[in-house]
Length: 144
Length: 219
Image (cartoon, helix red, strand yellow):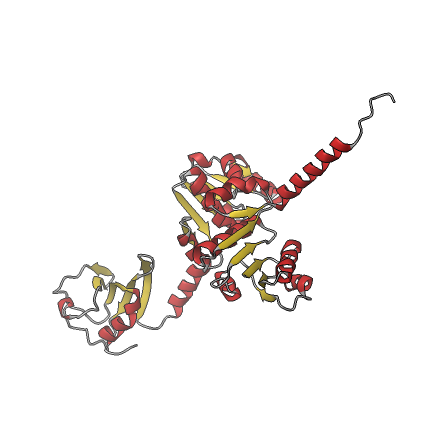
């Protein structure tokens, strides 16, 4: 698959690494050249310097041919805009946006955007860990 | 009316709307900016993120006729307009776009009217330096049709001819003749004179044809 990752922060670069390792063709877009240092060792990954909220940058990154596009910048509104641009203008088949604010859920549902909320995932995972942790620990009756 | 964005544009827009007698709420998410706005807009200031349903709700979006998003970020303005339309059924939404390319996205997503000050200023600059005698004035019908202004310079072969004798490209029409500070709505008998400025409606891609026709050659 040919996948465009918009945003080369911690999440974007990790994702690019995994995808590239799995044999996919990956292009990463970021307006900040310093961020590309995170993926400097991935020789197969193409780096596009530019802002993802610009149609020409996305077009230059291959939005017209890609199979999937993930919007993983730090800003929810940017990701929402990038995701809609990819879907509506470039007709990308598979588009996912990262949103940090869990309260954005209903908004995305209404616009029909698939999303991942790292905040919610982390909260859920921690909740699980704490729940199961509490179940295993032997409870000491008070006074002993 | 709700104005989202408390920067210079939002501030002056709000003041102007208030002066015209409108009921306005201004929404700003940054606390420092809010403190500055409090001084003279305190009563109508809402400290919230106007690009979220919760923020717009706080600002009274369910009663608003117009929501104008004028923050410095195109993406925030786009999402604000979309939320206003989808969640609150606001009929008129206007979004500022700094990047003129984003005007198209507003249209595709049916988010409302996009206003690009960059584009407006660029057009004005073009007008100032445009020494050609045809100018595009106003795009219509999703830019497929345009309003053109044509100058009847001395060399024009059309001078002295009547409108009926001018063979315009298909789908074009001369709608007004500006002469000596006045406007003439032409009919077939109206004669074109030197110094006239003619307003024509034509398909946007017919500009060269119009030029050739009215000036004898491309100017």
